[in-house]
Amino acid sequence: MGIRENIERFNAQLKDRGTTLVAVSKKKSIEDIMEAYDAGHRDFGENRVQELREKQPLLPDDIRWHMIGHLQRNKVKYIASYVHLIHSVDSAKLLREINKQAKKAGCTISCLLQVHIAEEESKFGFDEGEIEALLGGSELEQLDHVVVTGLMGMATYTEDADQVRREFSMLRRMRDKLRETYDLASVRLDELSMGMSDDYLIALEEGSTMIRVGSKIFGPRTN
Ligand SMILES: *Cc1c(COP(=O)(O)O)cnc(C)c1O
Image (cartoon, rainbow, N blue to C red; front, top):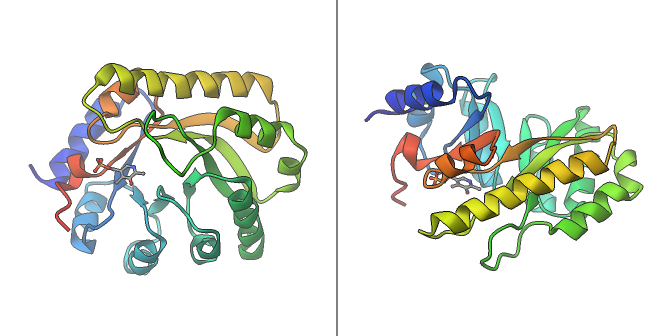
């Protein structure tokens, strides 16, 4: 199946739920991205700053670029002026740097806090206590060039669908609880970015508002 057909199939599936499809275009060519664009798609995700910097000037301005991969603080400055949403904010330090660069660029950047939900070890992501410390602390109010709009999580890479469901469900419950507890001007916590090609159906059932899909749209990444 072609890229256009894949986009249309996802659109039909997501139409009535208000879920955003982020087409993950990492390692894919400008031509492939334009095929999705010409099918009307505007939300694209990249996981590396370098690759995003190369592609962004070559593609239409109305693309909404999502940064979904681990982001180093010293690279925020390269994407601050145009990035639509950063899904992978995994520390208060990074959030501070995003605020600083957004201020310089004269904009406000929407961010998701990446939560470590997988049972497998990972270096990246907050745990619940760290998020509570951030939302409950006084610093966030001073960061007036960032808005935290939700949480992002990646489930364990496993065939065990029950485990994946447990992890997504935990993220949703965490979001619900935080949203009730912290009523802050700079925090909305509406978005739940969860689900990729292999687990997006489970993620949708568990309340995902944004799925990040690469191979089921563009085909397998070979390199
Ligand atoms: C690559 C990637 C995806 C998409 O993966 P697929 O399995 O190809 O859908 C989603 N989220 C993140 C953070 C990624 O790096």
